[in-house]
Structure formats: structure tokens, C-alpha cells
Image 1 (spheres, one colour):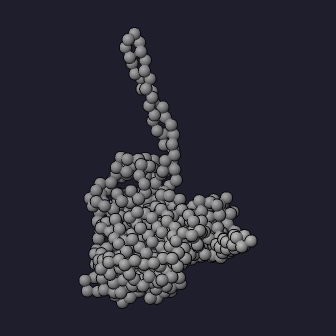
Image 2 (cartoon, helix red, strand yellow):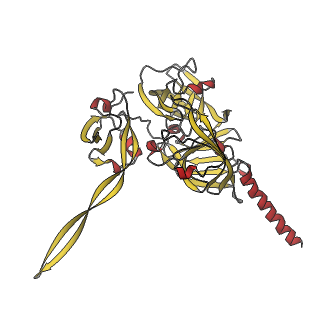
Image 3 (cartoon, helix red, strand yellow):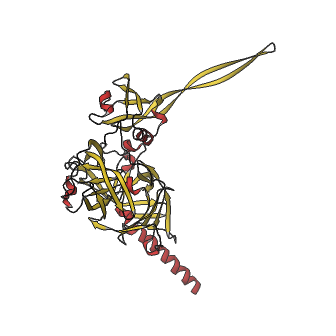
Length: 442
């Protein structure tokens, strides 16, 4: 009898545990594991993780710069699986106005053994909001604060693996090379203070948002401090895409960024236009953003509950140079195109002791990645050569573009000053060729 009671008690405890997983908007590791390990993709400095939502396997951008989960790029079939929905308006970074969105509750999220059975998400149904074209793979959403609040998160950029630890079971270890910083929160988003040398004469202890979803090294907000002003040497550029539209600004170099004992000199810095980030000025103490071009250079321990972040060890990216796009072109994924591929077959014939070989050619057709020019920076090498937005790029230096990943093209445009770039493009049904050389500005 006692054994039966013990078994019933265990079953009841397990049942209560499952109910707890599904009854509140919290992420928890099922079973007795102390942590969940997950592999991720690193594209353009950004972390992409697989998540199952209501039974659909999707790709999410991991981003400390957002509080709630956001979804987009869903088919009608996928969107119909969302539960308990209502229409709302959202606004984020970018020069646009409020956008239509759908608020949905009671969604089932699975990340390996991590489960949340009652998750709140915001769906953006507009086709204009699309990160996928800039990443080269389909991105279905952004997840951040909801996940970081429930775990201590260990991000290893070198191995491209991330561990989510139960905060109650996580213990810190002594680390001689670690740099620990306190986290400060405003509207549930994490900030830290870093020493930034604006010039040889000016330095500031800047309050920066920690932004895993920002691919740049550093953003500074002009006039957010008496010491922060746009330098004389800069160039205008496209900085990225926000919820409310495209973000433009100025790019330059900064003298020094100090992360405790780690020093970065001549790092890239961007100054976003005030019209693109109007709503961030509501937090008057904020001076800018620390992005993934810096963050990826370390193994990170992010602990929201403990209110601290640890830059644990230099990663394999630590000594990468700070580069920028010297072509003036922004490329985007343009779906797929049909490409003929020639196949050969050998046909052997034997006539009166002599052999002949015939090579027979046939063609098969395959769907290949296509790329389009989305932005051309004014007065850049590409602009002076005559390239325009909506030009479809067929070849780069004689190689078909479908042989490249988008990040490989970005790397090619960013690494070697004076390199000649030849582009075969299609414009309004016409085949044209343009060439230019990569050019440093700052």
C-alpha cells in the first residue's frame, strides 16, 4: 500500500510539473537536466536558433534588444495555428509609423527540452517586414527577453553552441580572464556602462543597450551627451531595418572601447539618424548600443536575474579586423531562379576492334539562389559605376552569384581596398556589365 502511495505521489508531482510548464508564460527545462545545449547559426554576426511553435519548425533571431517575442514571414497555414488573437499596433526603430500586428496568447514553444505552453507573441503580417532577404535564410521571428529572464545563458561563439541554465542550479566559477559588468534594466532591456574614447581628448562612460540583434560594433546617439558629436570624417550609409522601417545614419571610427582589461582601437561606430530612432530618446540616459560585432569576440554569460554579464574568454573572432562595406552596395536575397545545368554521358562503341567514345550532353534545370541590389550608397564606387537598386546580380567576378552565400558576398565587399569588382546584372530584361574598385572612406 505504501509503495502504491509513493508511486501515486510521484505521478502526481510529475503531473503538477507538466501543468506548471503549460499553465504560465515561462520557459522551463523539462525533466531533471540542469541545462539545455543548442547549436546555432551565426550569420552576419547574428545568432539564429531553431524553435518549434505550435508544431511548426521555425528559425528565430536571438536578440536581447527585444522584450517580447515577435513573429513574421508566416504562411497563411502557419498563421492560422496562432491562438487567442487580437489586432494591435506596434512601433519600433525605423523612420515609419505604427504598423499593424496581431497579439496571440497560449502558444506552445519548444526549444529542445525547453518548453513554454502559454507564450505570448506578436505577429507582423505585413510582407514589407522581412529580415530573411538580408540574411539569406528564412527568419520567422525574434525572441529575446522572454527567454533570457528564465535562464542564465552561456553563448560560445567559437563552437556556435548556446547553453540555457536553470538559474537555481547554476554556479559561477573562478575565471582570471573574465570581465564582469553589472546589468542595468530599463523597460526590461539590459544595459551596461563602458568607457568609450570619442577622440584623443574626449572619453565617456557610456550607457549602452546590449543588443545581440544588432550586427554592428557600436551605435552612439548624437547629442545624447555633451561629449558625443558626429566626427568630421564619416559617410552616410544604410544601417539596418527596424520594426518601423529602414534605419539610416553615419558611419565612422572610434578611438577606443574599453571592456575592462580588453581594449579595442579604431573600431567601427555608427550614428543613426534621429528620425530613425526617435522613440529611443524617451530613455534620456541611454547613449547608444553595443552590438554583436563586439559581443561575438567573447564567450558570454548573460544573467538577467543576477543582473550581470560576463565576458568570459576571447572567442575565435577576437582578433578579426573591424571592416565595413567598401562597395556601397547592399545585397538582398531575391528568391530563386531557374538555371540550366549541362550533364554529360559517355557512350562507347566498338567497331571491328576499334573503340569510339561519344560525349552526349543533356540539360537539367535547377532552382538556384538569386540576389538583388537593395541599396546603393550615394557617391560610393558602385554608385559612380552606375549600379541601381533592383538590379539583379547574376555574376560577381565571373562566378554565378548562386555559388555564394550572402555573407560571403558581404565579406568580399569589405576586406581588400582596391580590389576590382565586376558585376553581371539584369536590368529590365537587359544584360549589363559594371565594374569598380573597393574604396576606403574612413
